[in-house]
Length: 109
Image (cartoon, rainbow, N blue to C red; front, top):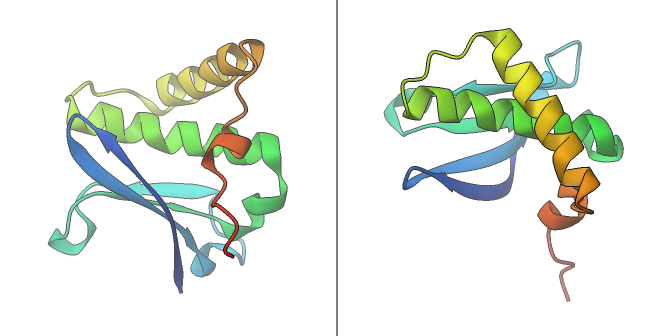
């Protein structure tokens, strides 16, 4: 089951982000689908990341950079995406930005 999390825009293209239950059992931390069944791109994250702040942030950035690479035809290699994700997280954290806090769903009233 997919649990909707957020939407982001890259190059004017809306990309939904989900937590995907199928990733829980030995699945990857996340993946990017660039043409999700003809419905457009999406990012799916392992729900186990919800309680792992640093790993969640790195994985989210990693998958976002895969989307950037696809949208802008940059042909990033996996190592490029990984380095960009880690370096970007270091920069953001150095500036006091925590993606976990920025991306949290508002509490329902």
